[in-house]
Image (cartoon, rainbow, N blue to C red; front, side, top):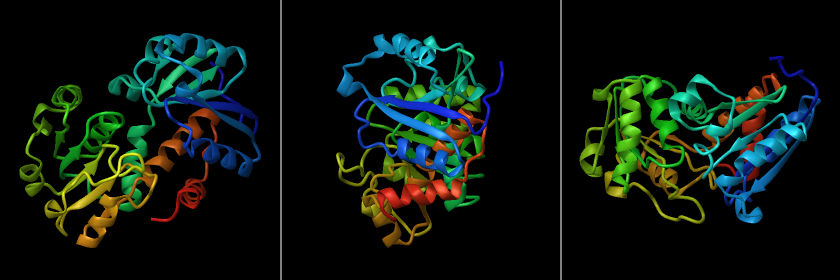
Amino acid sequence: MTSQLPFATHALFLIGQGIGGSRTPAMHMKEGRELGMSTTYRLLDASVHGLTVDDLADVLQWARRLGYTGFNVTHPFKAAIIPHLDELSERAQALEAVNTVVIRDGVAVGHNTDWCGFTRGMEGQLPGVMAGATVVQVGAGGAGSAVAYGLLDSGAAKVTLIDLDHERAAAVADRMARLYSPDRVEVGADLAGALAEADGVVNCTPMGMAAHPGCAIPDELLRADLWVSEIVYFPLETELVRRARATGCRVSDGGGMACEQAVEAFFQFTGVQPDRGRMLAHLREMVGHA
């Protein structure tokens, strides 16, 4: 398999449902221009085009035939795309989820950049807090598996998963227990009790987005010695971020993860390391400062 030549033309797209507001295309195209590349990035919204999991084989064939460098994948296709790929990275295989597909010489390789996007975003805003920490993760769907993986990979001593869908949380916990250790991950039902013993909390629910207003953590459970991590990035200042800061908590907003997963995806696509500071500044400019 040959490596992709830098400073070439790269055609990319994102496939998912309800992705009209994604800032990913703008981030990739602007960074490509800054690096002297001709980079195009389109949206393939399943809601607009009537696409289902049954169409994924055709989408991949279409991408190969039209010479696409690769594409990003989001809900609800991160697991469904896997059977159609030729290879998986070690991390994508462990997570059983793909958000980045790279095409080289017709060979499609699935990667997962959500987990490192989360950990690098956290390290950029709250360096060192994950190692040895007891963490409550609220929400086990979507990026929840990648976040749990990132926490444990970064040395969190224990992660308690809390989700209204108990079976979904249990599935993530079982997967993480196989990868790490059963005594480092558990499913919880008592948010107040879990937070009372926690060093930090991560919101992996959509609550805080414009379409899902509200705050995943009640005000009375926030305290100044608790660090708070948010993965929602639009808006950057969610209710949780605002209330946590008002309480005196150390806070990591969702901009870090959104940028860092794109930074890694850009590198996988092009073979060129982008300027993460420039990409983060562009993202924050687009969605508003926290």
